[in-house]
Image 1 (tube, one colour):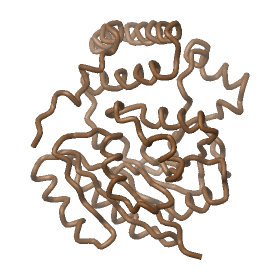
Image 2: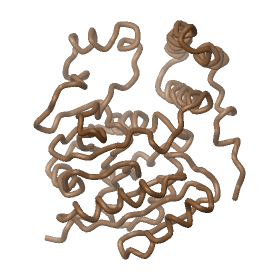
Image 3: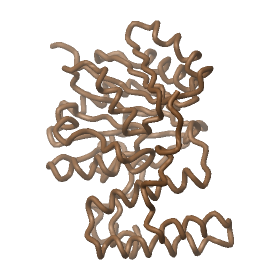
Length: 305
C-alpha cells in the first residue's frame, strides 16, 4: 500500500533557529509516511530569512517568503498553495515545537481508522518535560457564566477534563493550534482557515466549522511533542488586543446579538477586575467596550518589504 502523504506547514517569524530545530526533529522521527515540509516566512527581518535559507537545500523542504506578515491563518493558507495537491493530510505545526515520537505516522494511522475525525492533535509537553493542556472548550455563555467545572459536571462528554492524563484517543472540542493534523479533503470542504483571524482563535473557528459539517476533533495522547510555548510571540498590549479582535470575530460568526452583548459584558468586567494588578487590563476593558474593532488589528500596521 502506498504511504500516506502528509504536508507539514511551518510559519517562521524572526525565529529561524526554532524552524531549524523543528525540521530536524521531523526528519529524525518521521518514518511511516511520505511527507513534505513547507516553511512560510512571514516577513521576518532580512537576517532571519537569510538564516532560514539553508533549509531549502533539503529535498523534502520548501521555503517561501511573504512580503507581508499574513498571520497564522493567512500564512498557513499560503503554505497549502505550495503543497502537493494530492496530499492526504495537512499538519499545521508551530515552528517552536519538536517531535518526541513519530507524530505524523501516529496521527495519520489514527485518522485513517477514524472516519468521523476531521482533525486531531498530539499530546503537548513543555521544555522541562511536564505534560501540558492540549485541548480546550469552545466559548459558550454557559461555560463563561457558570464556570467550566459546573458545565463539565452537567455534560462531561462535551467538556472532557483538560487536566486528566489520557492514555487512549479522546474526542475533544478543539485542539490547541500548535499542532493541528487535518484531513485534507475535510479542510478543503470547509474552506480552510478564516484569514480574518490574524493570530488567535483560528483553531476554535476551524473546529466549529468542522462540527457544523459533522466532523469531530480528537486528542491522540500516544503521539507526543514539545512546545516551547509562545517563544516566537512577544506578549504586549497590542498582542492582547489582537486576541479580543479574533475572539469577537468568532462571536459575530456563530452567536446572536444578545449573546454577543453578554459576552462583551463578561470580558469587559473580567479585565476591569484585574486593573489593580496591571493598568493594561483597564485599557483592554475599554477596548472591548468599544467593540474590539478589527480596524485596529496589527495586520493593518505593517510595511511591505
